[in-house]
Image (tube, rainbow, N blue to C red; front, side, top):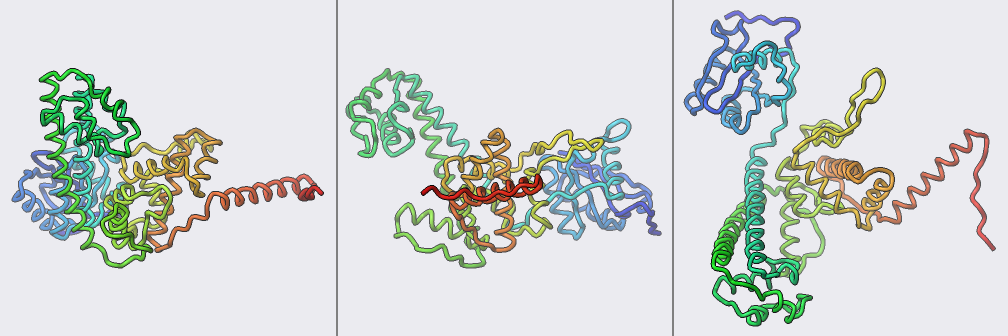
Length: 440
């Protein structure tokens, strides 16, 4: 079949696929096939037949609409068959002229792709996708476990067991011991108060008073069921942790020196080992950045991986995160500079890390407080998250080590900048500024 290329086409042999739950509509350029639009099923054999047809037509690039999770099997099959697959956001092609249908969607998608009007979404490497799937499953389990803790607290309050008034963490060592004793059948407040750990601030008398209530059977049943669900999820969480550790250990290519190793068996040693695994994978220790703890670094690396070569510059990376100011300009006037709304998980982790810097003595903490004095906290939080994103990018791409020079160094730096600005302003007005002499 003769191949021709129009002057305005960037991808003359591109196909477009409108993804659905039970079937997929595919459109190829009319010069590649007489029947340029076909429908294929969602089964694996159907996807292989789809790939065979595209290859037979001479298609080299495929634009795939990111619909739910239905695009993932199609993406993987086509990529394995050697086709270049572009995953595109459905919002980029929502303005379909005329009546909307699946046939018109795939044709419009193919047309936009051939003219080069679409941009491919970024998908991490396969090994990162494996880690990401397990990490997201762990987040789901943590959220579900927290919901069962809330149900336990509700059952306790309904029995007027005010455990939350005397314990900071209901599921801490003391709280769990008391709840498990209640489920086992203990009802004596004094006997329950004996489970109090010595580090609890509330006295035994206060705990005894809080544990005096009514023991209704329906609330005890809910408490028992909720505790059983909590323990079951804890078992699955342990499996997730073991799986993540095995995956990350295999991915570690280098040995990063983190300094002195804490003694074995301590809580600090467990945190050190987790830091070591993440640092070996990334090649740098991202937890040295103020505000980024183990949870934040784990989310960042599990979502994007250590390889950021897909982003040409740090500006591209921050724009992908949705942390760059908007550029809504008309007639030379800036209409809006708001950042776009985004559900990016890395963005959320960076914004949470920025919030934790409000009381930090680091240079980043001083920077955050300085911004809060000039603007509202949400905007300051976004600006600090942007700064953290730049640090993450430079550490992962250049292997640079982060060194915090402290709050005093930052404040002195800002003082020198203010003095330099005053001198420039005075010179422009024909004056000269000299420092005042020290008092005798």
